[in-house]
Image (cartoon, rainbow, N blue to C red; front, top):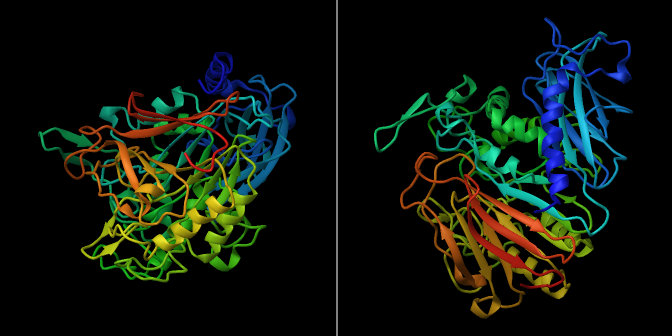
Length: 536
């Protein structure tokens, strides 16, 4: 287990207690307030709560109100909320779709934090709604504490939405019960380009039923439609319960906007009246920042254009989230800075899939990191050949097993840097392809040889169609000791398992264990990696 049985039981039981008792809790920091029961005309937080980008001493708490409200957060060491600390949050209004984030800082490291969010009438603080409670654990400052996290991606894809007959997004309950310290969502949090129909007939004649909404009845084009797409997933009880217990580190990929999009693209898609992906992606990024607690992407701190990407404000998805001395998570954005999808045969490609600035940032931050393990959260796989039409390619690899070309040139530069700067403990995690696999890269099998061996693990989808396995590109010498994928395209979650990955880091030995799991928790593949090495 990532934590001792005592701490695991404590977190689960405390969450249940906090959730069950939240309606009856008094609010000592708001002594003038009325009792905290929901009443007619008072703000309500029916979309639940979330915590994101948790470190040793900080975290971000998210909520959405049903009307204008002042956000107040209380934190305490126990579910009784004795000696609670209060945090004054923003006034939630239509500018952010009534969502808001409150930054918590100065938290005790390696401790369970209980929190509850109260929404108050901005004109009358005595008019309060029912508080919504949650809990999370801050990262430890010492190396002896074990660590567990999960990762996956791809939610509500290909028209497979919240199916009440299956119990909704039940994979979130599988993950919650394993009590991870956080969840890394590797992109495709929504399928803005995939409407959710009321029902779908499966190949065997069974009927798949979906919960539907007006916004998800068509592709997302307006800001309101993108916001509705992000709200859709929060209709699921499993996801809201998961969010209240498990902090997130969230990145995005293509389906937050449109399949295989890139900057400057004009869509050839008759479903759209707005064809400019730059316009659509700006609207999606705005909604993405409103619906996830992300430190570097805060709609309440200004714009989301590239020119606003200052250190002090929001505007970018890529970032480092430090989880104590054992782990740094390097969250990439392979979408917003890429060049156009192409055959990928160019011999010079400084923009590539990351953009020159993000690549410099990644090399610099990897070299600065003193964490035992450096997880590179990639929203696209490295060695899998992901096509975009008949001649173009969507990811890094382009099917030519020879020397690096196109976007492979950036990867070669990065891998060379990791080797020559002696960056230890790098592991790549990804999703995107709708199956699960383990891939090992080694120079003795590769056309490009100036790098140290490394592992890339693939897991997903969370709730989307399953797809057949893709070919490997031999440029960086991959081999695939494990793969599980369906034999036809777009198999429903009722026909093909959904997948998530699990990472355990042992606080004593520093060993990192990756387990690829499927819905229900069954382990499909396991690999133990040793700390302190440049290559594995």
